[in-house]
Image (cartoon, rainbow, N blue to C red; front, side, top):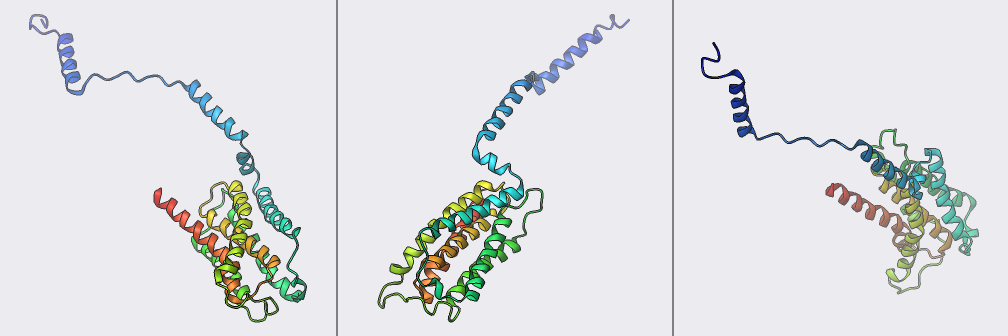
Amino acid sequence: MSGASGVRPETAADERRAELEALLGRPEATPELDLDGLFAGVRERVEDAERSPSFRLKAQSTPRRRLLGLLAVLGVIAANLLLGTRPDLGTYGPGLLAASFGSLGVLVLLAVFAALRPTHRPPLPRWQVAALTAASLAATVVLAVVPGYHAHAALPEAGRALGSHALPCLVYGFLVGVPVYAALRLLDRGSPLSRVVAASAAGLAGNLVLELHCPTGGPAHLLAGHAGVVALYVVGVGLLEAALRHRD
């Protein structure tokens, strides 16, 4: 009886399907994923990364990475000590030397440990990064202006412009910190704000070397030429970090 009504069920279904395809469009066949090719490509990229020296450094355990970071700092200081020390270094009292270089050393140690923080640990809060950076800047400023500490150091010649005697120290201290900063960046696994902490360590290393080498005193020279190294690193890298966050 259904055939006598004039429309077969199959024909009506085909017509409805054709109408839907006209409205929605004919679905395109989904290409099959080449899982073998995808896996081979990922494996090739991983093998290329494993062959790079930076990957091997980052793959080290956290204690070993921190040890390598400290060795980079000590290596830079030792290499500069081979060039000799300032002639008036022996006139500093042992207590003053221990206090000044001990405080710088502790801050470098803290900065290296903070810059190479394990990735499974929560990142350092911003206030701790700011506190460590502020302590690094404050320590070098205090060493530059504390009364009596550099009293026996030779003052710059009268009439010389600040840049003529402070700029060489600023440039030399900055160059001393470059290997330290580069080593910490190579060892870093990408923890947030680690650039700023690594900059503090690099600036402190440069300041420490200047304290061992430069016989010139005077608050203006020490602030601009010695303490300025830490400020240059921190401000420069801080601006770079802010620019990168803004770009992202």
